[in-house]
Length: 118
Image (cartoon, rainbow, N blue to C red; front, top):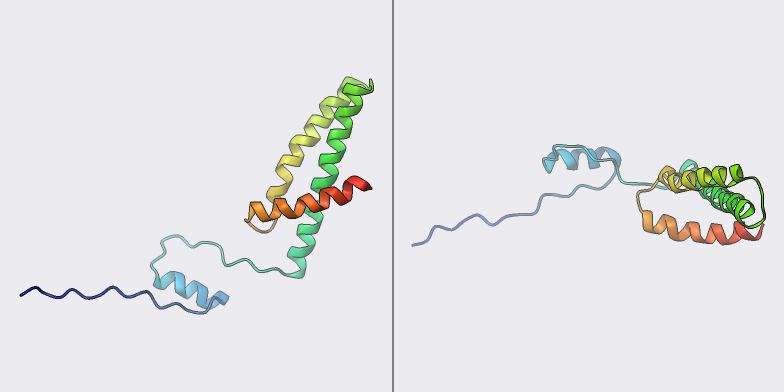
């Protein structure tokens, strides 16, 4: 006769409110405590909008400086400054409050289009 093994059961899930979320992580045996679930608040929306505008200004401004130096004879240091601004533009999206890079970049595309008309 074969012994019967206990069937694995899924861990009990608690509602994802902050306190219960922390308790859920403890019950699941999480050795490292990840960040809590992301929530949009007025301050995170404001931060996201400001980061989008800063990224747009850096991308357009840096590209413009390089264009002026290479195509229209502006001083070479404009190209160097434009390159520094473009490198900074590459770092600006990391300031977004959410970790969803693809979604952030898709929304930024709309901001870039609007800012390019300004």
